[in-house]
Image (cartoon, rainbow, N blue to C red; front, side):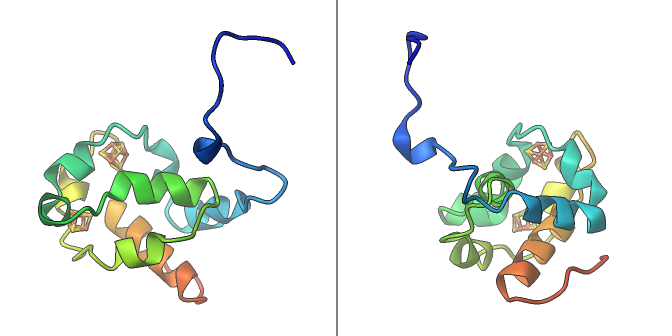
Length: 114
Ligand code: SF4
Ligand code: SF4
């Protein structure tokens, strides 16, 4: 293997053979703005739930994109769907709708337009 001068840490690696990375595309059909997220973190910086718990929307969103659904259900339950994050997003991402639809997926239901 070529030495690039760095290694990818194991816990952050994604096994593309097993990861369900297509699920995010399905969610993005209902919430197209999800694809505009550049993971800047402004949403998490303003989130009341993040201020009082270890909840982090940006992290949950990234995990969902990567098809790593383990443990995010419990995290998403900490969100109050207040919409504050949506107001500060510089890319106009409908964060509430993403959270809502991630919850829907994790509860084996069909995605919704909200
Ligand atoms: S503020 Fe918007 S662009 Fe930035 S991480 Fe949050 S959703 Fe993504
Ligand atoms: S909708 Fe959820 S993630 Fe967004 S600011 Fe409110 S509690 Fe935080």
